[in-house]
Picture 1 (cartoon, one colour):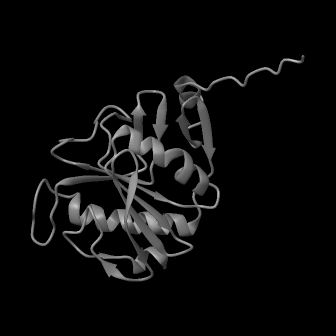
Picture 2 (cartoon, one colour):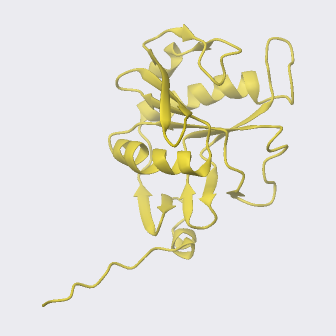
Picture 3 (cartoon, one colour):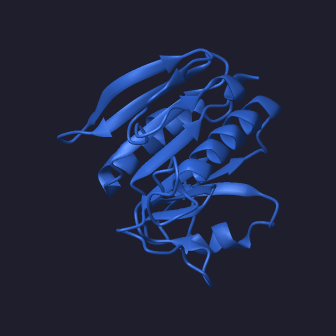
Length: 193
C-alpha cells in the first residue's frame, strides 16, 4: 500500500504572509487565492455599495429620505470563525445597534455581518455559492444577496431554519425594494452598465 501525503492545512499565518496585493480567503484550512475582479464585477459592486452606503451607511438613523442605521463596507476581512474562516464578501452590512462602530485599529471584523453580498465572477461563482454560502448561514448572517452581473440579477436569501430561504429575484434594469433594505428603492440599472 502506498501512502499519499496529506496536503498541509493552511493557517492564518499563511494568509497574513501573502503579499499585500494578493486577495485571498481562508476557509477551514484551505487558502483560496483570488485574482482581481474584472470591470463588470467592479461596476456592480461599486454601484451597489454606493447606493446602499449613501442611503443607509452615512448616519446612525433617519436623515431626510435616508433610513441610515447600517455600516455598509466593501471587502472587509470578516472572521466567521476567528483566524479559521476568513472571508472577504464583496459587500457586508452591519446594523449599527449590533456593531456601533467598525474596528478602528484592527483589520479583523469579528462581529458577524447582518447582510453579505457576493458579486459572481466566473472564477469565484462556485466558491461563493457552494463553499461560502453555507458558512455564512452557519455563522449567523441573516441576509445574503448573490449578484450575477452577466444575468443582470440579484437573488435574495434570508436565514431560515438551518438553511437559506430564497426571498426573491430581481432581474434587469429595474428599480425595486429589496430586503433588508426595502425602506428605499434601489436602482439596479447602474449595476449592469
